[in-house]
Length: 219
Length: 219
DNA sequence: ATTATTATTTAGACAAATCTAAATAATTAA
DNA sequence: TTAATTATTTAGATTTGTCTAAATAATAAT
Ligand SMILES: [Mn+2]
Ligand SMILES: [Mn+2]
Ligand SMILES: [Mn+2]
Ligand SMILES: [Mn+2]
Image (cartoon, rainbow over all chains, first blue to last red; front, side, top):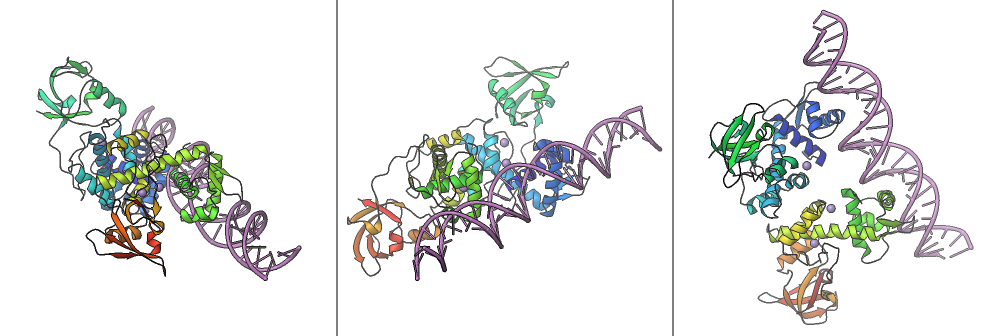
């Protein structure tokens, strides 16, 4: 499959929205890619032609085996570049997604594998997302839950499920990063906000909206 | 100026062919970019509109001050990525041009400057070409001549003026790289070939065609 | 100074990726 | 189970970058 940059972005977005094997709707994909449903329908026809998706009108989109393989390669490149930018060029985690969005389209297996090696074959990216290996295999991360559903008291932050600059900047301001250890002090039933304590920091209260996007596991 | 990838490639090619201030012809540009003269004419109109080139029909193309600035930024990114690939990812010099041809289009000054810093702000790329600084200033390399015109006996290789895989692979085979010291043993008038001696190597004879593309200065 | 050759431009077409507006299918509510 | 709403597709345009074939300009040769 020789895909254009636009087609690669579609394949990656479909992979993301499928989350396993869900059917992806035209509207959801249009929203994710910040484009119009009519454009998605057009592209769906092309991607079907290229055999990277299964698609019948009005019945939604899923990746073929070939499409999934392609998606995993793109995701691998994206996350490796994010690692590079953070680890080697000292970017902070809210800056790297946008740049990786472009770097991911440089299709060279040799480059990708050399980069991975250079970074020590990392298993997770700066947001805690797993990095597929050269064969597309993802090492399943240890079990984790979102902070709003955690029941253990003492937790460690393992991932963030929203890459938006605004959330990441908020977490920076509160000194919450991957690996941060925290203790749940209280749940407030009224708005489902959560009071937490990080060592050497004043306690702080986190909205449900934020807590949903912070992944944790018991320390 | 917000230029597309295609437009950036044109601007860089024009910069290369201008070599200072020569007027660039439609045909020369078409040949350099492996496209057709008619396409060049079309693009020339667009680039003129965007004020990156001066162009009047039948009179050839030159970069404006703005265009030159843009070209230098692209060249800077290209050569920094080449350095990265060679220095950090152990690519060899004949492999990097093609990859840099893509990486150069990621337009982020922050990324570019961080990359430069990470590499120790190198002044030349793996082919001996100078790297413009963040302001587009090129540190003039020390005076050099092509090997076929050198008159000193003992020389050091400072650059290669043909990036083709075939020439670079040839030089690899003969253990000629940047910094290689060599001695001119003889000039053969018949075909202008040159016999040279590199320490710990058998003498070898270099065709005029190759010698023209090897830049040297007295050791 | 014509003529031939070469360089460049124009005319008209096409593929990719997108859009708006309108039509149609699917789903939900009354 | 009709009617209303929402989702999706189609029709028709637009922009970008390219092409071929034909026309025109510039240059070189006779
Ligand atoms: Mn992308
Ligand atoms: Mn990420
Ligand atoms: Mn390029
Ligand atoms: Mn180079």
